[in-house]
Amino acid sequence: MPADQLIIFDDVSKFYGEILGVNRINIQIAPGITSLVGPNGAGKSTLMNLMTGLLRPSRGKITLLGIPTDQPETLFRKVGYCTQFDSFPRGLTGREFITSFLLVGGFDKKRAGEFCDIALERVNLVEAADRKIAGYSKGMRQRIRLAQAIAHEPVVLILDEPLNGLDPMVRAETIALFRKLAAEGLHLIISSHILHEVDMMSDRVILLNNGYVVAEGNIHGVRDEMEEHPMQILIRCDQPAKLASYVFAQDHVVEARLHEDRAGLFVKTRDADRFYLLLNRVVAEGEINVESIAPVDDDLSAVYQYLIGTTGGTA
Image (cartoon, rainbow, N blue to C red; front, side, top):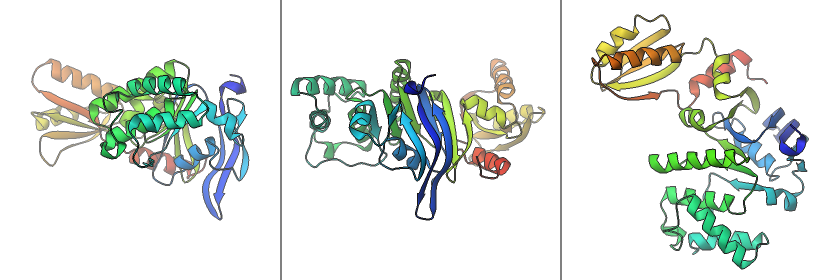
C-alpha cells in the first residue's frame, strides 16, 4: 500500500529525559481498526500523542498518510483525536462545544451547523445537544467528545479508551459506528485494555509493554502465536459442577474450577474453538442451561505475561 494511505513509524523512539516512552517502533498501519493494547505505562498514550504531533520523537520519523507530524495545520484537517480525559470549556452545551471547534477549524457557520448535526446523530446525542455538558453523565461526556473528534470528517481517528463509561447498549452502538467508519475507509487507532472489546472490533492489534511492541497482527494471529497460552473463560450456568465433569475429560482443558458464588465455572483451555464446540453440544443436549459465556482475561494480563516472558520485553 502506498505511503499516502498508511500511518508509518520509522525507527521511532521517545524519551522523557532518561525515562523511556517508546523505543524502536517500526510499524505501518493500514485503513481499518487498529487497537493498541497493553498495561498502564506500556506506551499507548505516548504512541498516540506522537501520531498527533503533540509529542515530537526523540529519534525517527512519523508520517500520517504522507503528512509529517510536524505540520499541524495540514495534519489536523485529516485527524480527529479523542483523549481519555474530560476537558470542556465552561458553560457550553454539547452543540456549542462541537460547533465552536468547527468554526475555529475554518468552517463557516452554516457548514459547522450541518457537520455538528451529523456528528450528534452518529453518537445518538441529538436530544441532549442543547443541554449544558456540565449536566451530562460520564457516558454522555464520552460521546460528545467522540462527536467533536469526528465532526470535521477526518480520515484518521485516534481514540484513547473511547468506550470507558458507556453502558452496554451504547457501547455496542459505538463499536458498530467504529466498524461503519472503518468500512468507509478510515484509519481508527483505538487504545483499550479489554480483550473482549478488542476482539469484537479490531482488524489488527498492537501489543505494547514497557515502550516496546511485543506482538502485532490480527487478533486471532496474535493468539495463534501463543500456542501454549490457555484462554480463560467464565461460564455462568445452573449446574457448574456437572459442566466441570464434562470439561475435565478434554485434553485441551488445563483447569476447571467453580466460581466463589458457585453459580459459574472458570475454564482454562488451550483450544477455545474445540471448547466452544463442546459447550454447544452440552447445551444442545438440554442437560445444562447456560446463562452467559465471557473471556476472563479481559484485562489482557495473562496475555501480557506470556508475551513478555517469551520475548524478554523487547521488540
